[in-house]
Length: 139
Image (tube, rainbow, N blue to C red):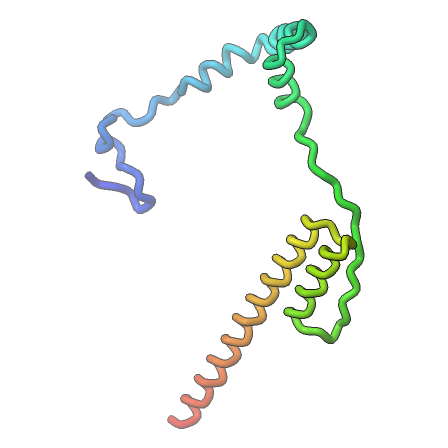
């Protein structure tokens, strides 16, 4: 069985020589529904008003966006001359003390970790370049 560079079966070798049909079931259903959206919404509203929890849930899931918790912005004082580890500790301490919401603390500690990885890669690049410079100086 031959595959493309992306790992997909080539047309005609997947057991379906014609390939995927141009119109899928979902596109057929969508085209039939398009002209009746207002009627369907009215039907769901009526059912929801009668106590149909599934109809109410369907309406809410499709119409009202999911609520996301909102956390107030909090300032955490971290001295400028401390390292990344101490910055992470300060963020965790602020969460433990109740100054910083846990979600924000987790995001900030993740950001500190990302910065640490960037610093580490930058340092490795600098070291490799220094070693390559020494090797080229001897030739």
